[in-house]
Image (tube, rainbow, N blue to C red; front, side):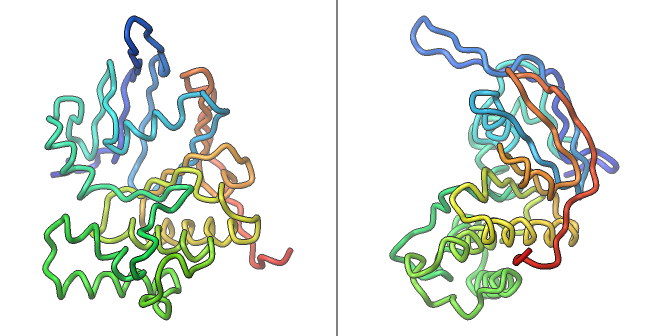
Length: 241
């Protein structure tokens, strides 16, 4: 249960290190920031800066080494693996650079899959799947196989899949990295539309052009926050400019 007025994400002095045998690699060195409900945040940084590790911690895919993480007011640091899996299943949606769709399955079945794990009744699953496909403009493609779609269409399906179940946060990891510039811009505008509807969106990217569609840019360098600035999000009326 979320605490009234709490940030959706609160990170306090987060450290992360990876151990391989006797070798310890430190990645994050004391990261602190809050993300409020309804924000669109871009996390930027060069390769090896720690931005993807940070997203994996926030999305319950990895554990921190030291510090405190609160999600909707709940302390995540103390949760068991099973409890983390439940949080991951019900509280967040993911959009990845390489889509990760089932290639020989229908679009509608790709959307339904997360709700099967959530044990959502079939009638509701179909209703929600059709609703999110309509929202991303692909209801006419629901019976096509995902490998019959263009890259941009596949990413729209991935976004629709991330939306089912009304997650608190949508994480997008380099969502335009595998797309041409025009198609990538359409995906960024779709993320903006979702944010306008009240969704909290956190996007990891190394591309400044993509980050400019967010309302806030957090820059990570060498495992630390180098800057954290709000901005006026870029919006274009035409993909042809």
